Length: 160
Ligand code: ADP
Image 1 (cartoon, protein in one colour):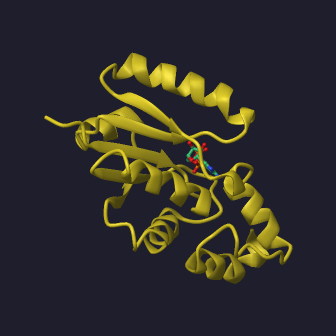
Image 2 (cartoon, rainbow, N blue to C red; image 1 turned 135 degrees about the vertical axis):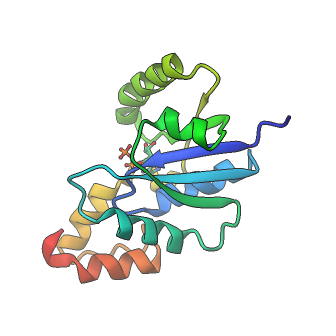
């Protein structure tokens, strides 16, 4: 059987063009990518809104399906029969945490291989928190998020 399913988990609070860049790169490697939005807590946007914005940002990407989850990533991977766990790697700051996470996930599910993908250069320093900060101060975020996310940020500006 071909290894053809990947999950790409995260909080996506909100989804940025850095995230969509990674998801699209993953579709070049596998047949199906599940972009999995974690339920989590203490997020600026609700789970429902984060999921809606992820779907709206990826409408053109047929190989990506947006799902929600509220369990361990490895449990979700088992449920979706995923072979790969995709994570994005930005500047060196991501490495330490991502390395630990990959090691723990390997302990929990050895057959799930973590794939680290690097975004386009213009997104290498981009994060959801920077986008929220920019938007909160009325900055132009159009180069970093899709139009629906831009609208959602503008509507929520006072509470970001
Ligand atoms: P988490 O809540 O797990 O920190 P995020 O929603 O921030 O997750 O991001 C999910 C994944 O996407 C992580 O692997 C993160 O490193 C990656 N990521 C976030 N922003 C970017 C970006 N600009 N370029 C590449 N990868 C990114």
